[in-house]
Amino acid sequence: MINKPIDKIDLNDLEQLKINAVSEGKTIEYKQQLPTNSDGDRKEFLADISSFANASGGDLIFGIAEENGSPKSIDGVEIENIDEEIRKYENIIRDGVEPRIIFATHSVNISDKKFIIIFRINKSWIGPHRVIYKGHDKFYSRNSSGKYALDTNELKIAFNLSQTLTEQINKFKIERIAQIIANNFPLPLYDGGKIVLHLIPLESFSPNYSIDLNPIVSNPAKLKPIYCSGWSHRINLEGVLSYSGGRNDKSHSYVQLYRNGIIEAVEGLILSTEREKKIIPSLTYELELLKSLAEFLNLAKEIGINMPIVIFLTLAGVKDWEMGVDRSKFWFDEYYKIDKDILQLPETIIESYDTEPRNILRPMFDLIWNACGYKRSYNFDEAGNWVAK
Image (cartoon, rainbow, N blue to C red; front, side, top):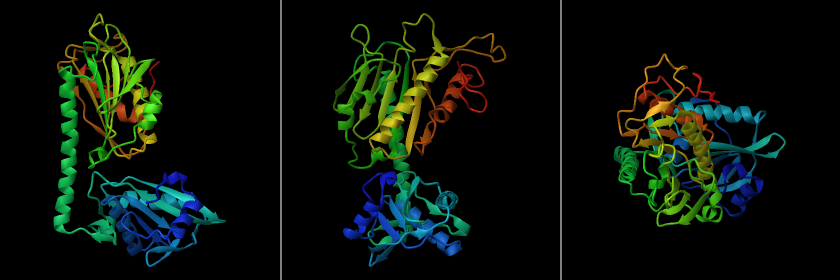
């Protein structure tokens, strides 16, 4: 794999592959021509793509001729409409591999209508993936010699690893919520209900995986807690902690960036016991979560965390709270108080940084409104557009 963000790769980077005789292997493969429309070529293409996802990820590069596995010449592929061509192969990947994989594409124009096309496939944490194109039902992986079909024992191991990862994620989330319920925080927080947001990258559970914390330590403005205007930060055993100021030596909001890329954000002012009534401010909490999730995803992208990321939203200490709305406008819904102390909402798996925060959180917001007796969050219209004022 070329050690550079895919959208930054240029002709010089490709020339370096040839100069340094970077051989094909587990994370890179060269092809002189794009697949034709024949079934055989498309199956081969999907086998290559899925093999990267089932192994360590990598770059599949078209337009480079190889000799004995090393780049021989950077010729490019002649293409009339590059955008249309890329869309065609992206659709082949989406329809021909199950479950869907996460990948990116990039083209480098080398002369006139000649292009190098790069498919970058992330290592998958939700595999194994199989090729399903026209009845071709096989699983592939890769080693230093290239792709190969997985045998029964390897498939069993791959499925077990996927199951183990799911268990690890749920275990982490459950343990952290238990600590929050027990008021075991990194620092004293206001009393009352808590809004808890977890962003858990699947790659965080890879052995020895860690992120570079220096960009955050040197610029803590990037790690802003939910619902605050000013905050401090400090390095701790777990990673970097940002927290808001408050009264009586207590904070109302913090965000912990763990060394393995997990983000935990806890807010305690919106639902604090200092409120006169146990009413959830329906506009405020949704707006603040939307803003914060956008900031957290931007941060994760900037520090190089790969998708997918699992998002969990939990409300703790909310028994007998009700949704704050103008009931004269919602007389058609039967409202009531939340009958559970902990609302643990179903997780959402994010596969792309292009996903809008409102599309991630709106189904969760709907469930919170459901818990209060309302049909959905009325801060959105039925099409999912934010309409609150």
